[in-house]
Every structure is written in structure tokens, then in C-alpha cells.
Length: 166
Image: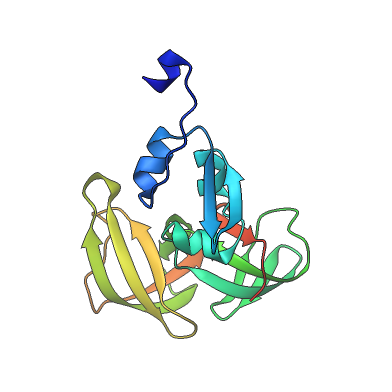
């Protein structure tokens, strides 16, 4: 309706789904200051900071030191997107970028919980042998049971370099 009327509307909400559905541009605020501005897709794909990433519901955030195509983290060495600047940073690893492997390669984890998400598949909460817990996403068909041990690898295309260092 607003598009048809050519009317500008400012909507203030804490509901991300509502904001992303209604907005042409999203402004994420923190303590009365702008943390990030962009289209809903830009903000979702490239959160500017740990605060924005966590506000969007992403918990796989870790400090890292980038060296070439890989970063050293508390989860071990993981790939980063091509062109990532070397040095200290924080990384967000989207749950879709934490892939279960069918072999003994990768980070060993125990499945602490699994949540069926309908057509979105299954969300897994993993306890790695090292580092903080991880959230992973997989299909129902490949979802392990709670208590199972699995190995995971990280996909560079689902790693986001955040703009702040803790």
C-alpha cells in the first residue's frame, strides 16, 4: 500500500521479520546510535559487527587471526572468503556453513540438541572438543540424534568477517 501511494513510512520495531518484510532500508540501532544501515538483504548477508550479527540471531561468532586463505580460531583453522585481509578480526560462521562430514576429518563435536524447523530442516546445537558451542543447519535426512558424535567442516562462503574486534 505504501508503495502504491508513494508515501514514506518510518516504522520502529524490534521484530526483525516485520522490519525485513516491510523495509526498503533497515537501520539497526545500539544505545541510541546507528550500528548499521542497508537494505534488508545487505544487513542480513553482511552484518557489520558482532552486535548486529547477534541481534540477527547468529551465535557462531569467534575471534580469529587471518593468515592467507585460513583463519586460526578456537575451533581450529577454518577457511575465509577470498580477499580477506590478514590480521585479527571476528568471524561469523552461518549455521549453513557448519557442514557435517561423513568421515573423521574436521572438528569433532557432540550433538547437544536438535530442533526441527519444518521446511528449513534441522538446527543442531553442537559441543565441540574445543571452542564455544556451534549452531549448524542440516536436512532432516542427515540430522544426527542428540548425543551422537559428529565431525564438522566450515564453508568459506558462509564465513562473514565482522567489522569489530573484541
